[in-house]
Amino acid sequence: MFERLKENMRKGAMRRVINVILDILFPRTCPICQNIVDDRGQKICKKCRPKIEYIREPICKKCGKQLDNIVIEYCYDCNKKTHSYDRGVSCFAYKGEMKNSIYQYKYNNKREYAGFYIEEMIKRQGEQLKRWDPDIIIPIPLYKKRKRRRGFNQSELIAKGIAGYLEIPIDTAYILRTKNTKPLKKLNDKERKESLQHAFIAGEGNCRWEKVLLVDDIYTTGSTIDMVSSLLKSKGVKKVYVLTICIGRGY
Image (cartoon, rainbow, N blue to C red; front, side):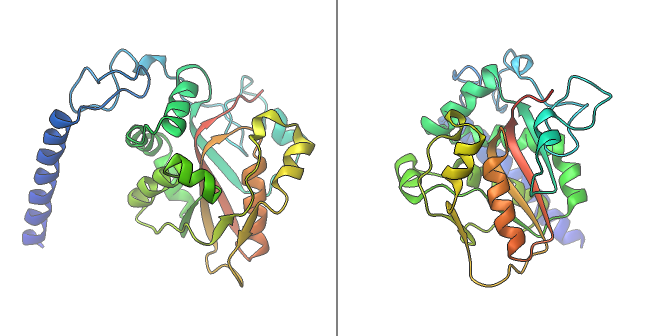
């Protein structure tokens, strides 16, 4: 046991050395201002961190949106419709600097920002994720042509980091996206449902996992999450939880 501990310490020291070298050769850019991070070894500039709005209590007990009123338990959206997933949490408010940061991450190939998002998500929601104790993580899939054009699935990068923290597997094959849907933010509720009809398919037979954690980048109305969650539950999944980088406003 002592020898294993020493070996782990050596590996940890080696990783730190490698990270220092990488920071020198390939300095990080800040996910907020897009400039080189002013404090080497950090993932965000000191001056930029206060610009971020994190999700804090009180939050909706269903989707995790921050609420203005400590008396109410559910946001406006969750009060007026029933979701197919069981519970969701998020890390950042989808506004201002974080809204731009996510745009850069997705559309300008700023994959390095994933490290910062993952670190903050674990710091703020890690204990909740452990309490949920999921069996598997499934990132919301992209349509194959969109993924090819973008070069990566932004939700999949986040899912891999969270999977490492929870020490559970990630599955990117069980749920597939078969339809290139329009951007949902431009559609109303009815149009979203119509657009998402038959947009996803699941593997054959019942799912072998009881508890699934879905990971996505942004939660607004939950239409996509609901569609995938409903599909999973039709395959025998008992609990579906949701983790997102950013979430819209609750009331």
